Image (cartoon, rainbow, N blue to C red; front, side):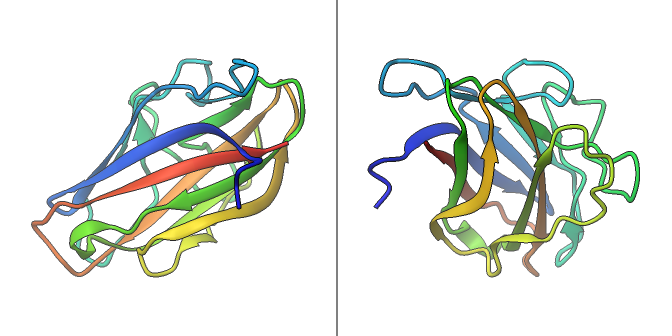
Length: 182
């Protein structure tokens, strides 16, 4: 089904700590068929590879929308009608336009009940809601097209948000994969 697609970047293991969450990425880039690096997950202001994304603590059933990356540790994601800032950016270093696909594995221990994302043109300062559903139940989602593209040499801002389950004091994990299609 996705045999023609290039696995373009972030494979992130997401681990939940007592009502909080850490997202660990492999911080690696995946090579295209011609051994060309295609997409990086980078900080919001510099092209440094993101190694971790941390969601701060939250109460059971709370929505957490202010994660931060290890690159931008002093600057969490901001979701607001103005002055919005993403958690990270996707950078297309391939020679062509790529359509972004996402997939996620189910969460262990029922830690997360929903995940949302936004993928917008870099510099968009008016992201006041993260509501594109990645998973409405915290379960696995097979690869699906976001319908959004990133032109060669350009970026998209990535916003993430999770809703915690009613479980407290547990940890869990999931894997987010970003795929691309030429």
